Image 1 (cartoon, helix red, strand yellow):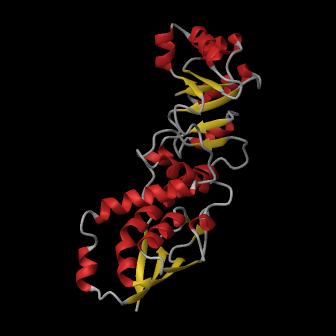
Image 2 (cartoon, one colour):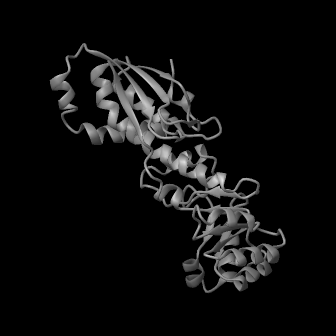
Image 3 (cartoon, one colour):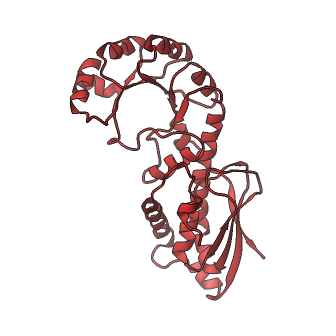
Length: 292
């Protein structure tokens, strides 16, 4: 029997517990107190149906494990045959899943399943577009914490499906000293010194700078692992790479768009983080069509 984990991108983990929890929340939201009263009223209980989940645009698919989990949670008798798995690039009109089973369950699951696939495939497809524009460079495209509340693990998984990489999952992953931390702490060096005292041996420290003078201060302190270069133009990024001389990992952030990403990658920085991957990804057009 096909399972949600068998449809996951093989190089991007998503916990089965996270899948189950988010699907349950989504169905609770949609079914409310009385369930799908339209399907209950119009479809006899014993009716069976066949359906196809189809891509209506080209792109990178993500979210199939959640679509399958949605169907299986509504009825164990639903059978699904997968034509692709997550992270597959599909063409417009391509069949993604073939579904058969109790008609009520399929109809009830339809919108929730499509919401998952549409949202996550949109993130994966946009990420793939960014990645394609960095081809030939060593720079990695990363997401941020600018995610939909409650869906961060899913959206960051979709970024991986599109060929991107994940930044922090939360505030507890790593120390990232931003401009406001520096202001309150009293400067770059005091902030770094306090961070280094508190950081465990497996915790990385990254600090944000918005001037080359601050970058030099960070390099002189010798306490950081990475530097976030905030809202620097390409000329400044190139100069930052020159000044750094490979000592720390450099990450460009702010103003990272599809139009600018190629030039940013060519500057020589190690990473570029773009909130747009998750907060501005358009929905991927897909549909669930009942077969006569």
